[in-house]
Length: 149
Image (cartoon, rainbow, N blue to C red; front, side):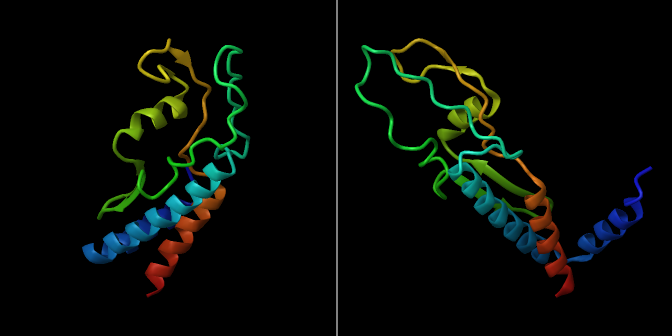
C-alpha cells in the first residue's frame, strides 16, 4: 500500500470542498502553468525526460538547396495552437484545430505524408506533451496556494 494514500485522500477531500468556481479557477491556473512549461520545453527541443528530440532527416540532393534554419514546432507551441483549459474536474493542455493531427504524428512516431503529393514518411517519436518532476511540483504549488486562500 502507498504510504501517501491517507494524505492523498485528505487532499482530494480538501479540493472537493472548494466551490465549483474555485476549482475551475484552480484548474485553469494549473493548465496555464503547464502550457508555459510545455512551450519552454518544446522551444528547448527536449522530451519530458530531458532527452533531445531526434534531428530532422537530411533532405535529398535533388530537393531544396540549403538546410532548414528554423527550429521545429515554432508555430505549434504558440498560444493559438496550444490551448489550456480548466474545468471542474480537469486541467487540459491540448493542440487545437488542424495541428492536432501533426502533433499526434510526432508525439507517437507515426507515418504521414509531409504534403499532398509526397510519399508516406515514418516520423521519429518526438514527445511534445508530457509531465516531468518540475511540472508535478508546479501543480502541487498551485493546489497548495489555492487551498491556503
